[in-house]
Length: 322
Ligand SMILES: Nc1ncnc2c1ncn2[C@@H]1O[C@H](COP(=O)(O)OP(=O)(O)OP(=O)(O)O)[C@@H](O)[C@H]1O
Ligand SMILES: [Mg+2]
Image (cartoon, rainbow, N blue to C red; front, side, top):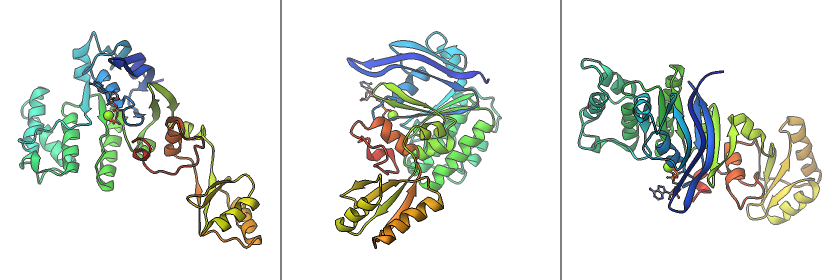
C-alpha cells in the first residue's frame, strides 16, 4: 500500500449560508492521478484552493505531503505546484521571463538550466522571448503548466488544465502529465472533459451538491450504471412505432426518433436484433453500440432531472452543467 500524498476528511466549506463542501473525504496515493469531477459550481476550485492553502476550510482535516494545511502551510507550499483555472502568466513578461521569475521565487540555484529545459519540453523555444500577451490560449496553458513544474514539486494541482486546448495540444498535455507520474509525481486534476479523467485518472471522484456521490476507478464507476445498449435511428415515427413493438425491452425517444435496446454488444445479439427488424421489413437509418462511459456516469449521478441514465449521449459535461 502506497502512502497518501493527499488525505482529506470531513472537509466543509460554506460561503455565507451557501454550503459548497458538505463534509467530503478522500485519499490520493502518492504517484497516482486523482480526478475530481463535478458540474460547474460544484466546488472543485474551492477544494483545490483549500488543499493548496489558498483558502481556509470551515471544518475537517487536510494533509498534503504529510503536512496539515493549516498548521504546516509553509511545508505544504514547498511540496506543491498549482496551475489554476485562471492562468498565473504575466502578460508583460516573455515566456522565458515568466519562467525565470518562477525559478527565482522558488529559489532554484542560478545556473540551473531549468528554464531552458522547460521551454524545450513545452515546445515554447521559438516564442520564448516574445511577450506572453502575444501567446495563443494553448501556449499560455503550456507556459502556465511549465511554471508549475519549476522546482519539481512532488504534488501538482491542475484545475482544468486543458480547457480551451485543441485536441493535439490536449493530448500533448496528457503526455506530459503521464511523464510526471512516471517520475513519481502525484497529480490532482479537475476537468470538464470526462474522457480526460478516463484516460488519465487512477481514481475519480464525482462532486455533486456538496458531497462526493461516487469514488473509484473509471472502470468501477462505469460498472455502476446500466450497461451496453444498441441505439437505432429511424426515418419517421411510423418506423419507430413498428420497431418499438417488435423489440422487447426497448426505450424510445420520439423527438430523436431513436430506440435503445439492451444488448451485450456481441455480434450474435446484434444479428438477432437486426433480423427481427428485417422480418418486419423495418429499416433503421443508423445504428450504434453504446458502452457506458464516464459521461453516462456523470449524467446519472449529477443531473437531478435525468431518470434514465442511458438516455443521453453527450460527449462533454458542459452540455448538462449550464
Ligand atoms: N469567494 C466566493 N464567495 C462566494 N461564493 C463563492 C466564492 N467562490 C466560489 N463561490 C461559489 O461556490 C460554488 C463553488 O464554486 P467553485 O468555483 O468551487 O466551483 P467549480 O466546481 O470550480 O466550478 P467550475 O466548474 O465552474 O470551475 C459556486 O456556487 C460559486 O458561486
Ligand atoms: Mg472551477
